[in-house]
Picture 1 (cartoon, one colour):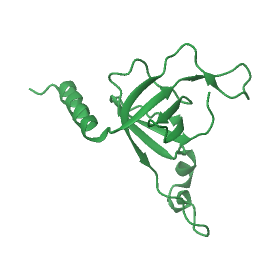
Picture 2 (cartoon, rainbow, N blue to C red; picture 1 turned 90 degrees about the vertical axis):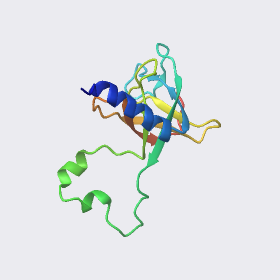
Picture 3 (cartoon, rainbow, N blue to C red; picture 1 turned 135 degrees about the vertical axis):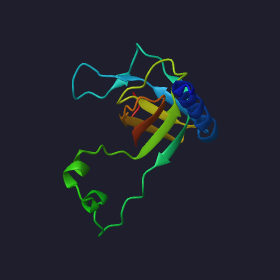
Length: 139
């Protein structure tokens, strides 16, 4: 009989081995006292490096064309979808702690880009899809 947890773990490891070729570093952030203050580095959490892959969304439409959400048949659902520039995928089984929305992820050494985590959909798997947007700010 198949042990589905073992099979899923083996599949995740194989996918990571094939696709995770980029180096990333998590920079944990925390809220400051005021709600309008920029976030600061979180003194209670330690950043860490991981291997993953990055996938950018479609290029922006040229001026004069409709926005992609207006092309969908269900406009209410389109307005509720989180906006993100890219998706970083990675196997999280060896991570010392989970990442959180509004943490930053630095791509590459030397730095190719810095991203702010917009959303982390939970699907029960150990291979995460992390929705990110480019940022220039540093905590």
